[in-house]
Figure 1 (cartoon, rainbow, N blue to C red):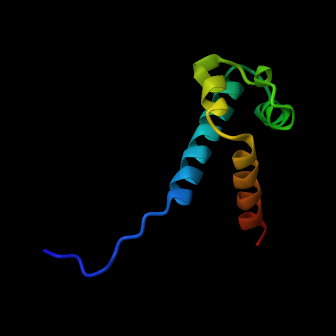
Figure 2: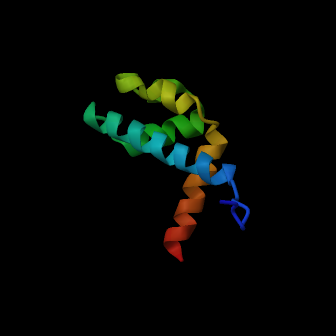
Length: 84
């Protein structure tokens, strides 16, 4: 059966969801290891030093696969959504 409407593919939405999922996984890994996840992630985002992120559950590798600027962009977008 032919589809009458064109389906839209939004790569930005997919990227945002992947980043959210990754940040959540990293946050939980840091928390599980007894770190303050917020402080550790902020330290990483500001400095770029992966030493802020534990390698537990491959968290360091996961977060390094994402551009830090993109993480900040997603965090700011989410903040703005919650403010409104």
